[in-house]
Image (cartoon, rainbow, N blue to C red):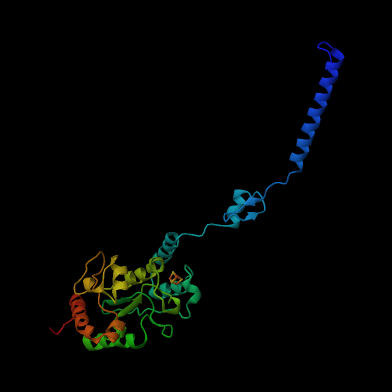
Amino acid sequence: MTPHDPPSELAELSRALSREVQRREWHGQRRAAAPVPPAVGPEGVQTAAPKEVQPEKRAQENPVPPSLEERRAQIQAQAAQITDLIQLQAAAEACTACVLCNSRQKTVAPRINGSAGVAFVVLAPAEEASSTPLGGAAGDLLDKIVTGGMKLKPAQTALISLVQCRPPQDRPPTADEVRLCSPWAQRQLELLQAKVLVPLGAPAANALLGKNQGLETLRGHIHRPEGPPVVPTYHPQDLLANPQLKAPCWKDIQLAMGELGLPTGG
Ligand code: SF4
């Protein structure tokens, strides 16, 4: 090709243009044929690309469960409308606010006479076999304290549980379970109008007083929170395991008797 040979230049330009068109077509086909990479899940596992779901539909399919505080507020509101202890117990027996309703075999009936003005309080029902909050040998020992020491009949005293359903496999209730369920017991105490509360054991005392202390710190004196005075003492199970604790327990019971105006015998 000479420096000024228009036909040759035109032919060369045409060939270059043709090569460029072919190159672009080839790359375009490659891009169109390339597969879409699958989405990667949270564990790095390749998953199918997700289908788009409308937010409203997603909310209907997966509703957010009510929080613990929301369920607690529902129990509080329901209990506040009930003014009869028997009806209150029936409402607690129908409660399904936590998983403990699945494992309970018996509902626990609190002893709700309480005419003497004292309410013993346990954290959770003690025995599956018993339908009361404190059965077996521990229940018998509490009855002995009431009859032999306080000179009252057990039926004159109230005995309630802060958690209404017995947790499975002898485990203690969790702090969340106690918080969620305690409005039932709080309403029982309101309707009982007890003059003095005697929590049995540190967990019940701490739950009632909103504290986190050992029983040796809590017992031996009268607490005066808002509401009736509270006199913590040992759980009867502790007295059965360690009879030496009966003497300091009796001192606590005498404190409670003083609040009730009962003669303490010195
Ligand atoms: S433990 Fe209390 S909150 Fe839970 S289901 Fe039983 S009554 Fe309801």
